[in-house]
Amino acid sequence: MSMSVGSAGQDFCDINTTPLIDVMLVLLVTLIVTLPIMTHAVKLDMPNMNNPPPPPPVQPEVIELEIDFDGTVVWNGTPVTGMDQLEGFFHASTSKDPQPEIHLRPDRRAKYDVVARVLASAQRNHMKKIGFVNVAEFRD
Image 1 (cartoon, one colour):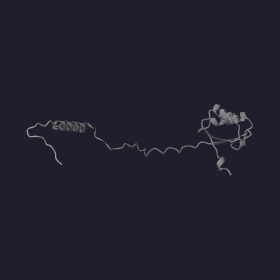
Image 2: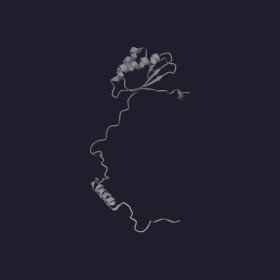
Image 3: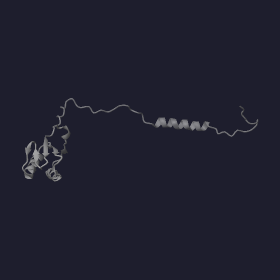
Image 4: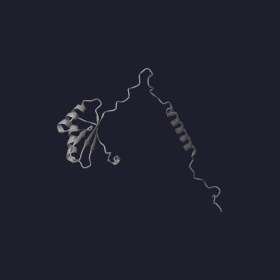
């Protein structure tokens, strides 16, 4: 392999990189100086030993509300005779602190109208914690 270097006396047109390197180093030093000093301390708010520990959270009462296929509503194992009695149960439960949770278990053959009326009654009485529970797959 051979390489042509050029003839003697010919000028080279190369850029002088020394000033560029000097400017880059000045900028790097400026950047390092202006960066804030990193602190690796983590501030923790430790509890005061003189204060008593907070009380454990109070678990709300759970109301089991079942709706059978024929429209019968059962409140914690007690059949409800009508919507007025159910409204009274909801009204009495609203004032408790913490407000009870309602676990609604409609039968899979229950009519939608009955379930909707029970939910509307709970909403009118400002019940906030209502959940649908399905345990059909766990029953024998």
